[in-house]
Image 1 (cartoon, rainbow, N blue to C red):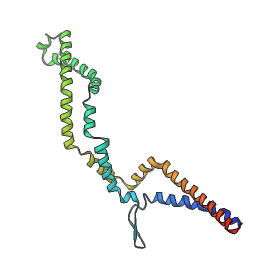
Image 2 (cartoon, rainbow, N blue to C red; image 1 turned 180 degrees about the horizontal axis):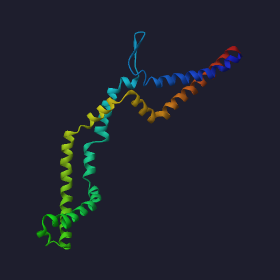
Image 3 (tube, rainbow, N blue to C red; image 1 turned 90 degrees about the vertical axis):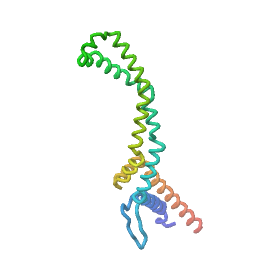
Image 4 (cartoon, helix red, strand yellow; image 1 turned 45 degrees about the vertical axis):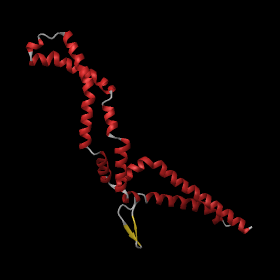
Length: 202
């Protein structure tokens, strides 16, 4: 058996790794269309960036970040409970300080007990009013703010370098795995070739 034949697995492994490496690079390169022998080549992501942006915009606006989800979060009683201490503090400051400055005569008749009662009334009214206000605000915001359009414009405005950087950050391990699999398969194919050559010569 020729010693060169033993190099077949290494050569096949290199070819397997190299072809997969080229395939990954062709996801992003060339950035602009290139003509070669009458055939136009361009990286898949640069070529499909517009479609990618549109699909991502629909996904974000319809599945990931809908206005109904945002509205439900904002109007939940838990959020108001978290804000209540700050609201109560502000009301207390208003009744004890601001009211005294603007209407000193009225403030003379408001003691601690009245302040506590007024705070309780205001907080209860606010608990009823807060969801209504937020729902109306979200309705107005939905008319003014097109999430899908914003996402589409942002992704479409990405440079090809930026898009490649983002995808590599997300899928670097998977890309490396594809390259290694190519090398392993190439090496195995080289071993099969040696076995076939050996059996054919025996």
